[in-house]
Length: 545
Image (cartoon, rainbow, N blue to C red):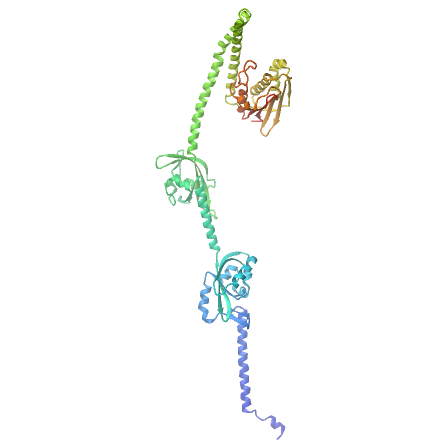
């Protein structure tokens, strides 16, 4: 047989059968390979909810089984966020609600670690919680970090499951944002109610129709009944003179943005009594500038008004009494002056004509009579001066030079100063907003006081001036006998004297007149002194009126 003939010999039936089987097997493997590649492609592109999970026995596919399709629909429709995690915290599945919480599409979440959505300071806490999830449900409050940086308060509940041979943890996540907002609103509402209940003023909140929405405890007591949800006008009847202050007027004023500020109103109570209140009303606007209503604040001034009226009556009575006193002073000064002058003159004539002609006792009686008559004349002059300083203050039109007034005063006291040998020193004095006669009386009384209560040594008198914020402080100091501190306030009273008339003459009204003058200009007068160390009388007068 030729070689060419041997090569062309037909293949045996057995070999052909085996080749056909091999080709069929290759085709089947190629089909399965194509299917596997298609599945992997679907997994990678998110067309199938599945992941390749590395496990102790190699890579495993995690996917929802076809029989779980109904449960998947239920999970997707849940209001809570749901994720499935492996033991390391890898997200194997996430529903749409969780994706909404973290502001990301689902396909960019699956395959990420849960720690991506946790604040750094809570990741360790969550890892511990995840590790402790073993047959028992774990629950905790956490904060999720959304992709845009928003923090979302949540409650997370963890439960361990086995799915497709893989140990997983199912996490149900509840968004607490609305709950926290509601809790804050409740807290704010409780705070508002607490503030209203503690407020001294009565506070009423009405809506745009005049219905009472909120009321403080003091307002409830003022109304004397339950007022919530009642119309404002059916509860409170306020009158501003002859005009009623009702809800339409309050809301109209609120719309003007000005509202009502502290108008005095009368509240008529159902029992017939009236209260006087200060009423204010301010608008309540929405974010779109719609008027929601207004807040009415009521301050009860009934007692204050009654006190003011009582004080007014007392002031009127005091004014009448002062007027009577002034008339009495004038009457005393003018009507008694003539008989007293006659007594003094005839006493002096007796003293002159019969001196040394009668016995020693008669000379003493006449001398005491003359001195008493002169003291009575001075007392009348001082009483008249005191009442004149108490008259209504007149507006000072221009300031006067205190240096000029001091010079005039010293000229009036020239004889007494020469007799005492006193040395006078003075600072440069300011311009003062007082009447000349009043400043002259101050200088005259205080300098005369120093001359009267001098010691045996050389008398030194110094006039000083020191500027303050609104007032000048002037002083008249000396090196006289001084005054015990216990009498510093006593000496400014009417007819108050520390020494008898035998050595120191006077009516005891000079310092009272000084105090009355200073108080007329809203100033004050006081003394700094000790026995044997002189006195420093200080008084304040305004820089300008």
